[in-house]
Image (cartoon, rainbow, N blue to C red; front, top):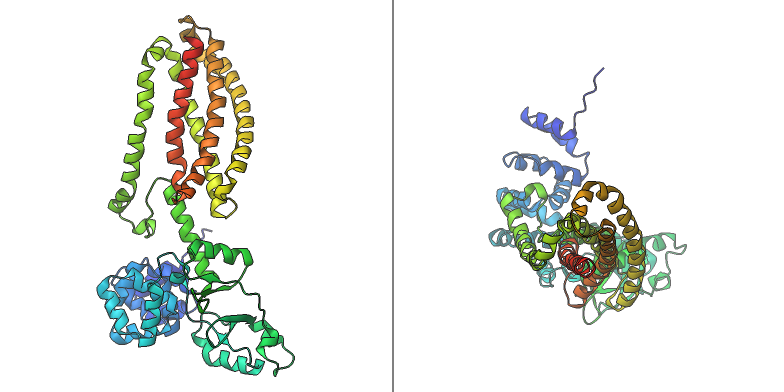
Length: 463
């Protein structure tokens, strides 16, 4: 008997087409906001407002945060003033700031008109920090306690203010000047046997903080390193101004990884999802890099031209050029990607260049000898059958040609791996993103150098 799998998306589409909105609402309220947002992002523009208005207020706000900026803009433009205020009132400050940052100026003006003066001030405070800094991704909604509070008083404050906070698990103990004295978890408070003891007796005083200007990628590394749910953010005067939660750090790590992968594939980063990025936008992100790499490949052509006479005398040499260039490019890419990853994880610094060179040289030497030996056997056994007649038509012995090719193979691998491990660290030292020195650039450089080495060795040995 055939099985028919019907997705929730298909079911909802059928229900909407039949105007069964009550049933649609019953289905949506059982779903996670991220899943609802994914469904909404696939809806036609005319159905999006109808579906969104079916959601309860709190669920609507959580779903709105997860939606694509284009669809957020469509909804904001279609909201009545009351609807817009209801959604904005449910958003956390950092989410509201992110949305404001993504929207056009006329939409931003409308948003800011419908938030309270206090929220507008908090949003503007976050937006004033540099892009990709800790201050730009923090939220100002956290639970603060006084050291002289009793456990009972602390619980009362959490009950009074916790509903509007990003997290209530970790509470920060502050002085009257907003300097951090310590922190206490909700678990510590709940397990306290005496409700009359002060928070000061329970708090941890060794608090790790980040500054507002720290790079967001470094903040994400700190959260990952210490396995915290949140990190407090302090200003230049060491006063606490906000927190960064683990979910924000996960978004940062995804964003940074996407950016690195995009750069490593010779494209400028783009923020929209792939299916929402038009061919024209993809063209603009890709073509400058392709042109740059195409022009840089001119050096390879110049090298071939300068050795034109040698290649004309021994045409068989050209048969091995693709193999040597491909192997060199792959070898360089292995080292560069490994080093870039280590830099991203904080395992390597520029000062480690000597250690990296030694490690990669040892690895390259073993790889070079192994591939050189295999290459000699391949050229003699396989290529000898294919090109033997061509070699015999010349005055050179085929084993000598095999020796040149295998020697070049070994030297190319060593050279490629040393270049591949050095370039990302040099880029970091110069203040560039190490990912720029990934496969495309490394391959282009190694291609030219491996070809030069090959033809130099061939000229010296065979001519």
